[in-house]
Amino acid sequence: MRRSYVMLGLAISWILVMVGSVNAIGANWGTQTSHPLSPSKVVRMLRDNGFQKVKLFDAEDATLNALRKTNIEVMVGIPNELLRSLATSMKAAENWVAKNVSGYVSDGVNIRYVAVGNEPFLSSFNGSFLQTTFPALQNIQSALIKAGLGNQVKVTCPLNADVYQSPSGQPSDGDFRSDIRDLMLTIVKFLSDNGAPFTVNIYPFISLYSDANFPVDYAFFDGTSSAVVDGGATYNNMFDANHDTLIWALKKNGFENLPIIIGEIGWPTDGDVNANLQSAQKFNQGFMKHISTGQGTPMRAGPINAYLFSLIDEDQKSIQPGNFERHWGLFYYDGQPKYQLSLGRNSGIVGAQGVQYLDKKWCVMKNSVSLDDSKVAPSVSYACANADCTSLGYKTSCGGLDARGNISYAFNSYYQMNDQDDQACGFNNLATITNKDPSMGSCRFQIGILVEDSAVSLRVSFLLVVTVVSFLLILM
Ligand SMILES: *[C@@H]1O[C@H](CO)[C@@H](O)[C@H](O)[C@H]1NC(C)=O
Ligand SMILES: *[C@@H]1O[C@H](CO)[C@@H](O)[C@H](O)[C@H]1NC(C)=O
Ligand SMILES: *[C@@H]1O[C@H](CO)[C@@H](O)[C@H](O)[C@H]1NC(C)=O
Image (cartoon, rainbow, N blue to C red; front, side, top):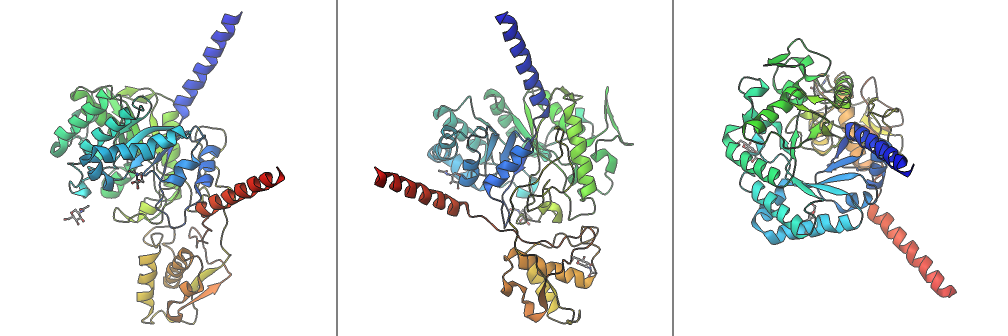
């Protein structure tokens, strides 16, 4: 009798584990924003949307504190700029682990991975981090072991898919990029020896962006007229083919079974002709459906472990890769969903709760000002350089505006960025404040949000505790 209950219990937990392993999807939480939502609001969003894993690019105190006792699995990141000191000093690595891992783990943050660097071998970094990444990885691993966290917390190094390639385009011809092949094999062996996963970021959007001849339908998951046939396997989407190019590279070098994490995958919604709500919805929903079967890819059966890129738009990201870079979020800057998406549960995604907006007012170009006014061009340049004009341009969300609309958009972006300060709607008297929403069609003229200072609220709750305690003491 008892035994059958135990068996039933085991069966139920097994089913839960299986369901969990198929459906558990992670999110990348970046913080390069001028007006971040408070960490507690973002953590609430993660939970409300069923994200069980989060990947961070840093070890910010407020962020990690908000993740305490949530049970959300955390991958905490080390920015590339820190690699040199961590590579050259074991003491620095130990301090980093003590401050940024051990302390939080004992406080109930479920840290499972440390991401050492972020795409450090990207070609555009010109080899800046080639010497420091592996020694930093080694030192952090030693520091984790020394801190008694060797089993619980694994190191990894999120790499761009440009670390491997296939000259023929067939996955079976895959191998690591020749200029870094030896280094990659050293890293792969190290990860394997330490039971750590290989983390790779795969971006069909970038392939489409950088190659005019890339077959559009091959970037998505709905079938393609450009399938890649590779021996017995047929690839109908770039994700599978790219993933399996990595599996072949690993297999050829004796690491066929190394666990893989998809560190970033997603599609931007603005800033490029291929970046829009429909395509992003199609890609992300297609990906979720693809991994929900739990079948894996032709070269590796089983669940795919992935983190969507990304949670919320980041208006301070460098646009060196392209204007789309600030628009990868599933959610806008204010935590509201951009489109409907099912993450494997019954409901669609839900936005942040309790976001406080500034007043319903916008800064626009005065009707009386002529387009030929010589002050217009420098004012627009100034606004765009200091705010965000990445939604202006060919086939972007505000690409349909006329010249006056363009100028107003730039002015308003600067005005909201500066928290609706009257001075920020000056522009040599070219601009004025209006209560009439200038948004039209797909083009949204934003309203800024109020930034909650978490330090302030901490101070307030501390004061409250002190007051209550002193009150109790007086009573005694
Ligand atoms: C912990 O991480 C933060 C954020 O990346 C970094 O600024 C800080 O230097 C780290 N602390 C130590 C002791 O290395
Ligand atoms: C890499 O080199 C290019 C061309 O020399 C330069 O424009 C770019 O700033 C360099 N990037 C880094 C990260 O050093
Ligand atoms: C609006 O601004 C964008 C980006 O600066 C530019 O490409 C476009 O030509 C402008 N449109 C008009 C009508 O001026």
